Image (cartoon, rainbow, N blue to C red; front, side, top):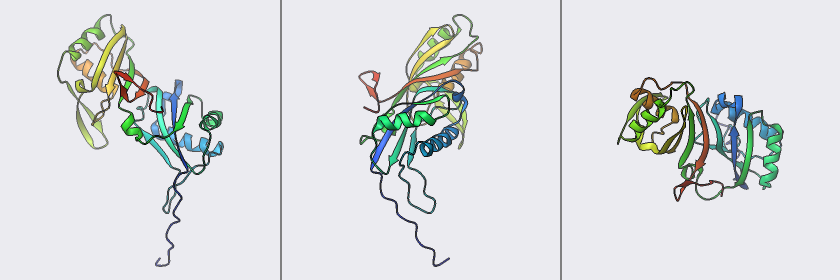
Length: 232
């Protein structure tokens, strides 16, 4: 044991690429961990030259930020890759899309900027679809929620039961038809998810359906009242 050699120190990445990818169709039901395994397999199959961490169990340098919850579709998920050699971002996108499972697709890639992904992902736009909602129910419950200064709900997390002020996270919200709400949320701590908003609406009116179909439309920095592109 005393003669155990220290682990090899890996060179820092030669390039950091940030990717925007989507989850569509049945892929919405995969967990963040499931996607991580699928991405690592795709990186190996596509022969992307990944940089690795140092230590006794090196792992590819992959960083995620603010992944959508399981069962949510998304048009705006982000991941950062550390590469051991410089690659053309467009070629990395094409190579990964050849081997990623159905439902996952990389839409864009760019070299990382100085700000971390966590700093750039300030807000999200979501569609919350609640099939079966009666005419006017969502509009009335949402108007009640938006008229309040604070509205708390509880959710079980890995660290126990947490209380969230849902209202403070909502920047804008509107009912687009009798079963769909479009909402913009700011990313705060603790993070308020769209299903927390549904919980709040159901506390206001039990007639609000409780099985939302969630789709993230956009995610990024807030720029002049709009969500910007974190890759640009």
